[in-house]
Amino acid sequence: MSNNSITEFLLLPFADTRELQLVHFWLFLGVYLVSLLGNGLIITAIACDHRLHTPMYFFLLNLSVLDLGSISTTLPKAMANSPWETRAISYAGCAAQVILFVFFLSAEFCLLTIMAYDRYVAICKPLHYGTLLGSRACFHMAAAAWGYGFLSALLHTANTFSLPLCQGNAVNQFFCEIPQILKLSCSDTYLREVGLLVVSACLAFGCFVFIVVSYVQIFRAVLRIPSEQGRHKAFSTCLPHLAVVFLFISTAFFAHLKSPSISSPVLDLVVAVLYSVVPPAVNPLIYSMRSQELKDALWRVAEGMLFHRQ
Image 1 (tube, rainbow, N blue to C red):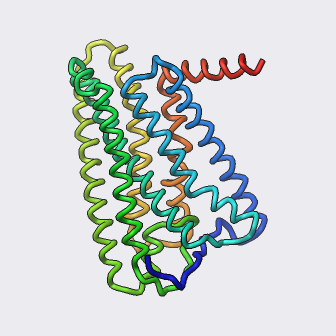
Image 2: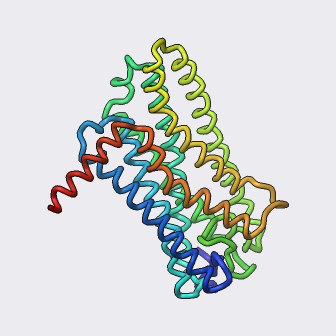
Image 3: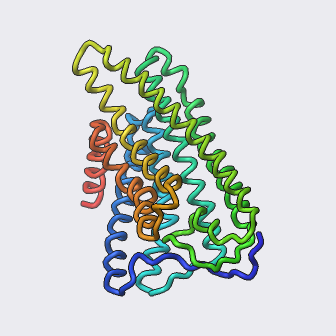
């Protein structure tokens, strides 16, 4: 990587005054702990309860791991900067944030697409569910999601940090984000990374179209179910995933595709919080509220912990 003259970057603080910085620190510490607790409980419940060893919950376990990794990449450093009244992050730390965040984000979107396919097969082709989504197939699909995330992160990070940066070292975001780093470039070679971002956006759009088409087929199949109880059960397994997909896609797309004319440091900060902090904290709540099986498993985990402590 180039840019040997830059040894550190300066991140955007959450607030200008010491008092507001501390308020933001405690607020985001609470959000971070909620995310750790929620996703940790889901991972524990699915791993420990054999009744949840199904494709849907296997993918949910992977989603929770990705959520934990995503929020742990961005938030701890931003929170640590507030009490110490510093904005600095090392060059290597910034590169690590970029590669990890892109990795978790890309893998999560790929996994959400796979989860849409899982729901499509379960509802539209239930007789073929065991064949199309056996344990080997599930493992391969999850591995493909993680592999795609790794490849995407490697390409974007190498491309971004090979650019010459001559517009200072102030990143107008609370974590190292590729669009903000590209603003520091002083060479037309940044168009190479923009082209890579466009290719990634096209792939993401293809996944989005697949999810939409899958759910159109799912809802058509659900509406043909004669019993109200059957429709309710089908909807209860689909709506949490659909809510997570909408939250993830709407915030991420708005963050990266909004017009530069409406861009401002405050708006960029708010949108970045929405797509990088809110989904990992809210996803466990969405899934646990709608899935009775998961709620029962979480209750059994809580009872087991209390019984063991006594």
